[in-house]
Image (cartoon, rainbow, N blue to C red):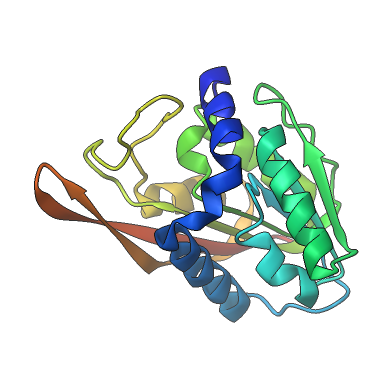
Length: 211
Protein backbone atom coordinates (compact mmCIF):
# COMPACT_ATOMS: atom_id res chain seq x y z
CA UNK A 1 0.00 0.00 0.00
CA UNK A 2 1.53 3.32 -1.03
CA UNK A 3 2.35 6.24 1.26
CA UNK A 4 -0.22 8.54 -0.37
CA UNK A 5 -3.02 6.03 0.18
CA UNK A 6 -2.07 5.63 3.85
CA UNK A 7 -2.28 9.39 4.40
CA UNK A 8 -5.66 9.49 2.66
CA UNK A 9 -6.97 6.85 5.05
CA UNK A 10 -5.60 8.82 8.02
CA UNK A 11 -7.51 11.92 6.90
CA UNK A 12 -10.72 9.99 6.23
CA UNK A 13 -10.71 7.98 9.48
CA UNK A 14 -12.86 10.28 11.63
CA UNK A 15 -15.78 10.18 9.19
CA UNK A 16 -15.15 6.76 7.66
CA UNK A 17 -18.12 5.04 9.34
CA UNK A 18 -20.64 7.67 8.27
CA UNK A 19 -21.33 6.15 4.85
CA UNK A 20 -24.20 3.63 5.13
CA UNK A 21 -22.73 1.75 2.17
CA UNK A 22 -19.62 0.87 4.16
CA UNK A 23 -21.63 -0.32 7.14
CA UNK A 24 -23.84 -2.50 4.93
CA UNK A 25 -20.79 -4.06 3.31
CA UNK A 26 -19.20 -4.79 6.69
CA UNK A 27 -22.40 -6.41 7.95
CA UNK A 28 -22.61 -8.60 4.85
CA UNK A 29 -18.98 -9.71 5.09
CA UNK A 30 -19.05 -10.46 8.82
CA UNK A 31 -22.33 -12.35 8.53
CA UNK A 32 -20.85 -14.48 5.74
CA UNK A 33 -17.70 -15.17 7.78
CA UNK A 34 -19.79 -16.17 10.81
CA UNK A 35 -21.76 -18.57 8.60
CA UNK A 36 -18.56 -20.14 7.24
CA UNK A 37 -16.43 -20.42 10.39
CA UNK A 38 -17.43 -21.80 13.78
CA UNK A 39 -16.69 -18.79 16.00
CA UNK A 40 -15.99 -19.42 19.68
CA UNK A 41 -14.18 -17.86 22.62
CA UNK A 42 -11.00 -19.88 22.17
CA UNK A 43 -10.21 -18.45 18.74
CA UNK A 44 -7.19 -16.26 18.12
CA UNK A 45 -8.14 -14.01 15.19
CA UNK A 46 -6.22 -11.61 12.95
CA UNK A 47 -7.92 -8.94 10.87
CA UNK A 48 -5.51 -7.56 8.27
CA UNK A 49 -6.38 -4.02 7.21
CA UNK A 50 -8.91 -3.51 9.98
CA UNK A 51 -9.64 0.16 9.34
CA UNK A 52 -11.95 1.55 12.02
CA UNK A 53 -13.12 -1.93 12.97
CA UNK A 54 -16.35 -2.02 10.98
CA UNK A 55 -15.87 -5.75 10.44
CA UNK A 56 -13.65 -6.88 13.28
CA UNK A 57 -15.54 -5.30 16.14
CA UNK A 58 -18.69 -7.12 15.04
CA UNK A 59 -16.85 -10.42 15.54
CA UNK A 60 -14.74 -9.52 18.59
CA UNK A 61 -17.35 -10.48 21.18
CA UNK A 62 -17.61 -13.95 19.62
CA UNK A 63 -13.90 -14.83 19.73
CA UNK A 64 -11.10 -15.04 22.27
CA UNK A 65 -8.71 -12.40 20.95
CA UNK A 66 -8.79 -10.08 17.93
CA UNK A 67 -5.50 -8.70 16.67
CA UNK A 68 -6.38 -5.77 14.41
CA UNK A 69 -3.59 -4.54 12.13
CA UNK A 70 -3.55 -1.62 9.73
CA UNK A 71 -1.12 0.76 8.04
CA UNK A 72 -3.18 3.83 9.03
CA UNK A 73 -2.64 5.30 12.50
CA UNK A 74 -5.80 7.39 12.10
CA UNK A 75 -7.94 4.33 11.43
CA UNK A 76 -6.48 2.54 14.47
CA UNK A 77 -7.22 5.57 16.68
CA UNK A 78 -10.90 5.29 15.71
CA UNK A 79 -10.87 1.56 16.35
CA UNK A 80 -9.44 2.09 19.85
CA UNK A 81 -12.19 4.59 20.68
CA UNK A 82 -14.89 2.25 19.47
CA UNK A 83 -13.40 -0.70 21.35
CA UNK A 84 -13.43 1.30 24.59
CA UNK A 85 -17.01 2.46 24.01
CA UNK A 86 -18.11 -1.13 23.43
CA UNK A 87 -16.24 -2.40 26.48
CA UNK A 88 -14.17 -4.83 24.42
CA UNK A 89 -11.03 -5.86 26.26
CA UNK A 90 -9.90 -8.49 23.78
CA UNK A 91 -8.93 -6.24 20.86
CA UNK A 92 -5.25 -5.46 20.18
CA UNK A 93 -4.62 -2.77 17.51
CA UNK A 94 -1.21 -2.89 15.81
CA UNK A 95 0.24 -0.36 13.35
CA UNK A 96 2.27 -1.97 10.57
CA UNK A 97 4.40 -0.62 7.74
CA UNK A 98 2.91 -0.72 4.23
CA UNK A 99 6.23 -2.12 3.01
CA UNK A 100 6.56 -4.93 5.55
CA UNK A 101 4.03 -7.35 7.01
CA UNK A 102 5.71 -9.14 9.91
CA UNK A 103 3.07 -11.61 11.06
CA UNK A 104 3.86 -14.20 13.76
CA UNK A 105 4.05 -17.77 12.50
CA UNK A 106 1.28 -20.26 13.28
CA UNK A 107 -0.36 -17.85 15.73
CA UNK A 108 -3.98 -17.53 14.54
CA UNK A 109 -7.03 -19.74 14.12
CA UNK A 110 -8.65 -17.30 11.69
CA UNK A 111 -7.13 -14.64 9.42
CA UNK A 112 -9.49 -12.39 7.50
CA UNK A 113 -9.51 -9.20 5.45
CA UNK A 114 -12.18 -7.13 3.74
CA UNK A 115 -11.57 -4.84 0.75
CA UNK A 116 -7.83 -4.79 1.42
CA UNK A 117 -6.25 -7.04 -1.18
CA UNK A 118 -6.86 -4.68 -4.10
CA UNK A 119 -4.68 -2.08 -2.36
CA UNK A 120 -1.71 -4.48 -2.12
CA UNK A 121 0.55 -4.84 -5.15
CA UNK A 122 2.40 -7.90 -3.81
CA UNK A 123 -0.71 -10.05 -3.51
CA UNK A 124 1.07 -13.39 -3.58
CA UNK A 125 3.50 -12.39 -0.83
CA UNK A 126 0.63 -11.29 1.40
CA UNK A 127 -1.24 -14.55 0.83
CA UNK A 128 1.93 -16.42 1.77
CA UNK A 129 2.12 -14.41 4.99
CA UNK A 130 -1.49 -15.25 5.77
CA UNK A 131 -0.76 -18.94 5.27
CA UNK A 132 2.29 -18.79 7.53
CA UNK A 133 0.40 -16.83 10.22
CA UNK A 134 -2.31 -19.49 10.49
CA UNK A 135 -2.12 -22.50 12.73
CA UNK A 136 -2.48 -25.86 10.95
CA UNK A 137 -6.19 -26.30 10.31
CA UNK A 138 -6.80 -22.56 10.69
CA UNK A 139 -9.25 -20.66 8.51
CA UNK A 140 -8.76 -17.89 5.96
CA UNK A 141 -11.51 -15.50 4.78
CA UNK A 142 -10.89 -12.83 2.13
CA UNK A 143 -13.52 -10.42 0.86
CA UNK A 144 -12.82 -8.14 -2.09
CA UNK A 145 -14.09 -6.79 -5.38
CA UNK A 146 -14.67 -8.99 -8.36
CA UNK A 147 -12.86 -7.82 -11.50
CA UNK A 148 -14.05 -4.34 -12.50
CA UNK A 149 -13.19 -1.83 -15.20
CA UNK A 150 -11.42 0.70 -13.00
CA UNK A 151 -14.49 2.85 -12.33
CA UNK A 152 -15.06 1.73 -8.73
CA UNK A 153 -12.58 4.16 -7.17
CA UNK A 154 -13.05 7.87 -7.81
CA UNK A 155 -9.39 8.37 -6.89
CA UNK A 156 -7.07 5.59 -8.12
CA UNK A 157 -4.24 6.53 -5.71
CA UNK A 158 -3.25 3.46 -3.75
CA UNK A 159 -5.24 1.06 -5.95
CA UNK A 160 -3.05 -1.82 -7.11
CA UNK A 161 -5.72 -4.04 -8.71
CA UNK A 162 -9.13 -3.41 -10.25
CA UNK A 163 -10.63 -6.33 -8.39
CA UNK A 164 -9.86 -10.03 -8.83
CA UNK A 165 -10.99 -13.18 -10.52
CA UNK A 166 -12.00 -15.26 -7.46
CA UNK A 167 -11.11 -18.54 -9.16
CA UNK A 168 -7.59 -17.28 -9.89
CA UNK A 169 -7.17 -16.47 -6.20
CA UNK A 170 -8.48 -19.90 -5.26
CA UNK A 171 -5.88 -21.47 -7.55
CA UNK A 172 -3.14 -19.47 -5.80
CA UNK A 173 -4.42 -20.52 -2.38
CA UNK A 174 -4.54 -24.18 -3.38
CA UNK A 175 -0.87 -23.99 -4.34
CA UNK A 176 -0.12 -22.41 -0.96
CA UNK A 177 -1.66 -25.35 0.88
CA UNK A 178 -5.30 -24.48 1.51
CA UNK A 179 -8.21 -26.89 1.25
CA UNK A 180 -12.02 -26.70 1.27
CA UNK A 181 -11.85 -23.47 -0.70
CA UNK A 182 -15.08 -21.88 -1.82
CA UNK A 183 -16.20 -18.50 -3.09
CA UNK A 184 -19.52 -16.73 -3.22
CA UNK A 185 -20.83 -13.23 -3.81
CA UNK A 186 -21.81 -11.77 -0.45
CA UNK A 187 -22.66 -8.19 -1.37
CA UNK A 188 -23.07 -5.84 -4.30
CA UNK A 189 -22.05 -2.18 -4.09
CA UNK A 190 -24.03 0.27 -6.21
CA UNK A 191 -22.39 3.54 -7.28
CA UNK A 192 -23.18 6.31 -9.72
CA UNK A 193 -20.72 6.66 -12.56
CA UNK A 194 -21.16 8.87 -15.59
CA UNK A 195 -24.82 9.44 -14.78
CA UNK A 196 -25.69 5.76 -14.51
CA UNK A 197 -25.80 3.24 -11.69
CA UNK A 198 -22.99 0.70 -11.70
CA UNK A 199 -22.97 -2.48 -9.65
CA UNK A 200 -19.79 -3.99 -8.21
CA UNK A 201 -20.02 -7.50 -6.70
CA UNK A 202 -17.96 -8.39 -3.62
CA UNK A 203 -16.86 -12.00 -3.14
CA UNK A 204 -15.83 -13.91 -0.05
CA UNK A 205 -13.29 -16.72 -0.36
CA UNK A 206 -12.97 -19.07 2.59
CA UNK A 207 -10.60 -21.97 3.07
CA UNK A 208 -8.66 -23.96 5.60
CA UNK A 209 -4.90 -24.42 5.98
CA UNK A 210 -3.83 -28.02 5.62
CA UNK A 211 -3.11 -29.76 8.94
